[in-house]
Amino acid sequence: AINTVFAAFAGGFTALVGGLIKDGRTVKDRIASIELTIGGMLAACAAVSSGAPFYDQVCAAIVGGGAAIAYIVFGTIVNQLRIDDSASVIAIHFIGGAWGLVAVGVFTDSTHYKHAFDGLIDHNELITGGDIENPRIERCMGIFFGKIGTTGDQLAAQFAYMLWTFAVMLPGMYIVFLIVQEITGLRVDPDMEKDGIDRHFYGGMINSVPQRLNVAMHDKAWTEEPDYDTIQKAQEDDEETATIMSKVKKVQKKVLAQQKMNHEEKQLSYVFKYHNNCLFVRKGDHSQHTKVLSCGKSDGGGVNFHEDELDLDFYVESDLVFYVPQNNYILQNQILAYFMNVHQCGKQRSKQGDGYMMSPAESQMRAKYYWHGMGGDFDTAATTYEKAERQVEKKGSVKRHSMGMPSDMGSINSTLTGDTDDKWAVYAGSFTEPTDT
Image (cartoon, rainbow, N blue to C red; front, side, top):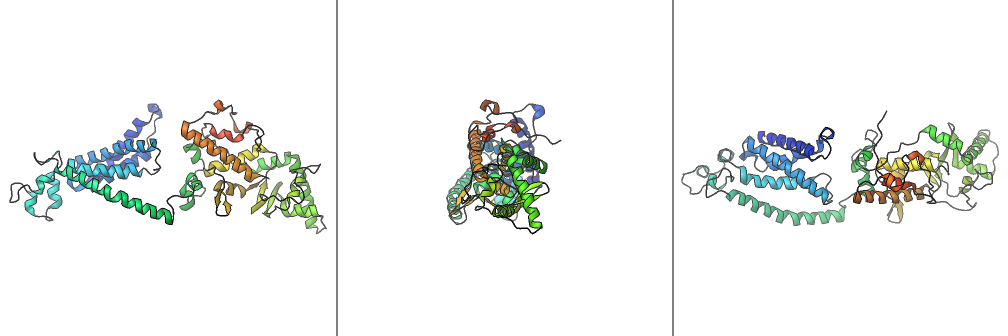
């Protein structure tokens, strides 16, 4: 137990110092990495476990420190090779464990070896010059402590054992992984991977999880979700939405007074609700009520639906959601950006059987907002999001000014139809998260 503690301390300290050295920033800006420190401790524990009873405390610390160095070096190589090992299992357990097996053949000494096996094997095997020629106490020592002529026997045995372990476990685990892949699958949905598995399976989708974590870890812009007053003002400033609001208020008065309504007023009552100075869309499938989206213009134009035209995207699954003005592209952009950042995913709906399953970002967005065509807007934005993410992964951060993009989110005034600059090209830029005030 003492050797394990010494090794863990040495591993954690070595990894901490190694991380500071590896950090390419100026000395005053370097950050002590908790992740590397804990990783170094784990690698040290994995390594020293092979021969903890056979070392003194100094050798245990050397084994732990060596494991931490191997963890940093091979962890960096794994990342450079783009191997998917988010928990650094290869560097900690595979490399650390392999070094631990080798260390037994290097640092085992006679005093601790004898103490570990005293009473468990023939005493003559634990003494030199006894009745047994070439006893284990001579054959099983490390290269730094063994008798000349037998030095290296234990190290050779450790290498042989390590090769045997590889030969048995690698094909065996490959077969196990194939079976698991066929039964349950080895990976979760790609959207959930980007969003964070803990958010979906381990109770992590709660308000205490920092929503800006994605911004700190990735090259993304952080956009705040619009508040109630912003949406209210946007509705009031938009002529078409204001017209719909006025009509809905009159309809609701008729409903309270139990007055007779015409067909258009009944549709408005079914689709919209005016509450707390804001226009909301009611829960339900409104695909057959597209004409209400055209009643906001004085010329009846609006979104220009025919009376019998269906819009399968016109549905709401929550009780009340904000109606976002149809022509307020900046507000729509802000909402899309916010939910894609929070959920760390921008993938389009993926086909599941004979239907479509929304990504978490779109599903949560629809639970609060609606504007016509938001499903297509999300898919278009998600495609650009994904392209930009791949571009950053391949080439590093692409500065916004090199793309001719404006320097602030508020100045983006592009359409959702692609008639002007693609507003989602903003995600190829390099940003820093704003500090809270």
